[in-house]
Length: 125
Image (cartoon, rainbow, N blue to C red; front, side):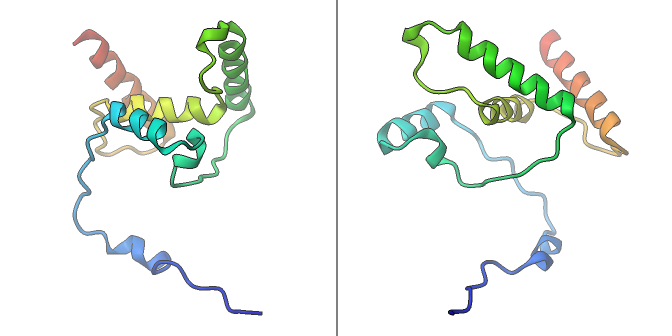
């Protein structure tokens, strides 16, 4: 049996970051165009697969919203399937556009508070 090739530099590489990474500009129109031109299913255009831990109420909410979206569409609006992954990616894109104060966040509750504050600021601007 052949030995498996080692990819990357391992866990130690995460400690090599010394400068902040610039936030890339995301052009959503370019992403949509790439998906159209590539002639591939949308899920095959993504680079990273990530497993996350959720509470049961979070999973229930994702399932509920997914079902509501899929059931409420007319036949002309069924271009692609909306999944839990679609919802999470959309939420991440929304958060990416917010100006979040990331200094001194002690826990997840504080992170949620900062996200809510940034979203409120965005709405009132």
